[in-house]
Amino acid sequence: MMAASTKLSSFRLPPLPTIGEIIKLYNLRAEKHLSQNFLLDLRLTDKIVRQAGCLRDAHVCEVGPGPGGLTRSILNAGATDVLVVEKDTRFISGLKLLSEAAPGRVRIVHGDILTYRMDRGFPDTISKPWDGDPPNLHIIGNLPFNVSTPLIIKWLENIANRTGPFAFGRTQLTLTFQKEVAERLTASTGSKQRSRLSIMAQYLCTVHNCFTIPGRAFVPKPKVDVGVVHFTPLVQPQIQHPFKLVEKVIRNVFQFRRKYCYKGVEKLFPEASRFELTQKMLQNADVDPTLRPTELTIPQFRALADAYAHLCMHEPSLLHYEFREELRLKPLTKQGNKPEDTFIMDEKLNKNKHGKQEKPTNSLF
Ligand SMILES: C[S@@+](CC[C@H](N)C(=O)[O-])C[C@H]1O[C@@H](n2cnc3c(N)ncnc32)[C@H](O)[C@@H]1O
Image 1 (spheres, rainbow, N blue to C red):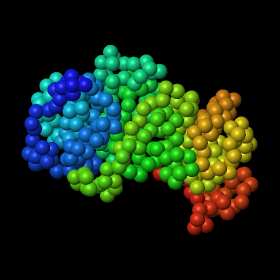
Image 2 (cartoon, rainbow, N blue to C red):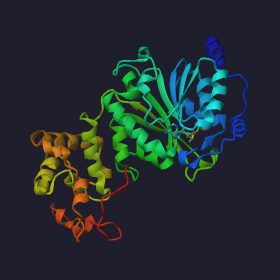
Image 3 (tube, helix red, strand yellow):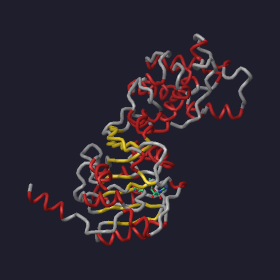
Image 4 (cartoon, protein in one colour):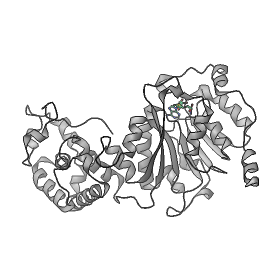
């Protein structure tokens, strides 16, 4: 025990200017377009890093290190190879200071995390078989709000395909999101926050909403609170179809969040065969058409994806059909989407609480 704590203390950084001093020293005014909200309190950055688990001798990719508060906590936790990816040039000098204080332990990439090839950033020797323990590689980041959703979707696709950071195995992620997004990621069946993002994340990962950081802890203070979320990719995804197919089924089902789920399922099929194929798909999946999308469990989404894949096997052109594309080409008639309401249902139930016909939701997740 004694030896272990001595060893960890050897990872601690020498005295450095505080993060506040670094910000002043390099005149680092937060840039709104890069969603810059800094964490200056090292107890909070330590707490985020603890959610990742043991980082002794770990390889870490940190997204958007900025002035380096979270980076310091990662280094103090014992990571020996910290690759930081930062888009804003102004932070590079401060990060170099940190790299000098921890010789050989910090690699700085001046680039965009959305395009950075993380599969090339670490040695193959750290890889672990997919069905074994996760590799000693972690992705950690106080994410910029403006890229957090596209980034997690990209990484979920990488998990499904075992590419990018997941070419090394079941790499774990510890990331911050706007509180509302963190709640969606972890929302259970029937909850108000259940959304497309909940299913996408949970069919591929164990997702844990660790804790909430109040907005006032950041400089400058964002309008919202922030949630820290931890992801571990599952050995067996709960739905075993190509990511694009699963994403399409989930996206269509959630197209009308408050309506019966058959309304979204219908939109997977061209008008000519819509009624027949929707009925077939729901029957084969054994899913009650009058459940709302938020009430469906992941096994029910699995059954829907199975049934859809089966229909596509018999009619491959279905895979290319996109309702939104059809909408774009053919403007809706005056009656909104009524002509397509081929299932006979109580009309009132297709209306929102203001009595208006619900339009397909445009929000991504
Ligand atoms: C919310 S701040 C977090 C800064 C620091 N990690 C902290 O906790 O104080 C987000 C950081 O991500 C950087 N950033 C924004 N977009 C980025 C992108 N596409 N790729 C890499 N870094 C990005 C910003 O410049 C900023 O430093």
